[in-house]
Length: 414
Image (tube, rainbow, N blue to C red; front, side):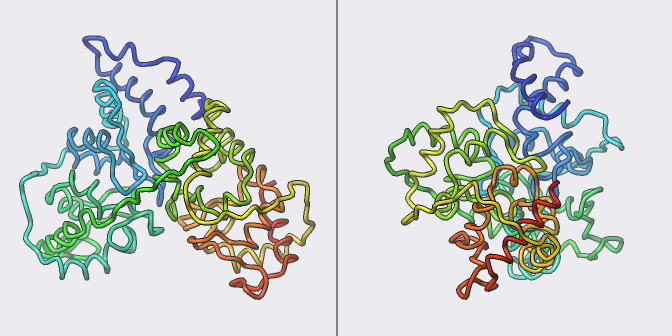
């Protein structure tokens, strides 16, 4: 059963049966699976397996051996500030209990043997020393200052309040000690580990992380008046879109694109945005949302267009234009100038890169040739996407070069 059907079934079933006075364990797990497919699967993927560089595996046996039910409950209710994990505080207790039961259901390859974590235990260490150790051993996956996916790394955000407020010193220490089987997170403590760190060095890494707590602040944006109902649009955006596209639609490199960027809004028509939301982007975490009404879509678009961001130029995009280029030449041009950010085949974040997927049918069916041309010609202000055309572009490519790239993208998507 695909994700969309599962979600529709989950909505139809509802949660009436969960509120019975007594639920057996099987019913509780099934109720949790229903909640998971409704609220969690878009980010954490089928069976909670996660996606490298996007969302962590939350059914990993080593993770579940370390975390308490209270740890999971706090993460669900409070979210992880500074990440796409928003607070799901509106969920009922029965729903959260079901989610935890589903995650812990005994269908993993190996049984979960609990690891005793002492929430009150602390480890002495030097934050100054820890910074150097973190840069050497942790930053390649978790990013500068532990910012995780936001910096294009494959590991999650461990340097912010959302994680550090629920993760005790002993939780972090034992994660370093045991690693996470089936992931890039190996053991780093002891002679059999990849780094042979000492307990003092582990304590110093923990001290450094604690020194970062709250260092990354979310930006608060002021919504201006617009011709549409931007107030309703903001509420709808926060419910349906902010988990991935972040507060105010600012996006996050390597995770989700900015959809309030002035260059994007200059060339993206209302129908382009509506189609993207309704149909999604197959092959990415952007699932289709045909359940969102046209009225709500109009409100969301009005909100995005109302956010102050400087002068937005009116760029005319001709959706009827079709460019005929050389796909073979375009493959080489793409490899030289585009693949570093968008992936070798335009698969985007799934390839662990900073830019979105532009080689998949979900994008190419909606984006006209001229839309792609105007994007390459203009770039996207305040992002890594610069202009690549002409003497002022970073690569001084010709329009014919971009015709070739477009032909290449469309040929490989067929």
